[in-house]
Length: 129
Image (cartoon, rainbow, N blue to C red; front, top):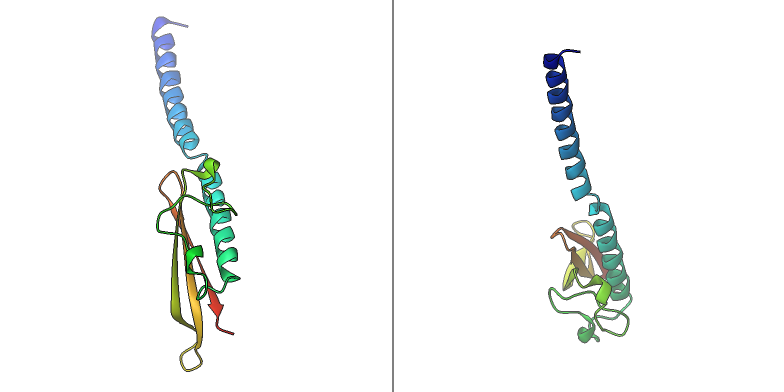
């Protein structure tokens, strides 16, 4: 192998390695995204399930303020989830159903913002029965 062939081989390997490392860096930077989204979903589901079984008309203190950390069953912040933010919006005068056959309902929107800034929103309805 001549010196020219050796230099060309080293340059080609260097370019390939740089391309491979840049791809690996972008994959590694986003590797936690599914975990953050799944954790946001679990938090939102827990809040929505709790709020759907409560008579919100008689228990307004149970509705948290805007942009608070997730709270445990004793209403204290959960330290492991301090990077997440929860917002709950309750619309008591929402209507549900097709036009002409709508029923009174309460609409509950639970939004969770994860540490990377992505927001996940779940919506639930509680009919007035």
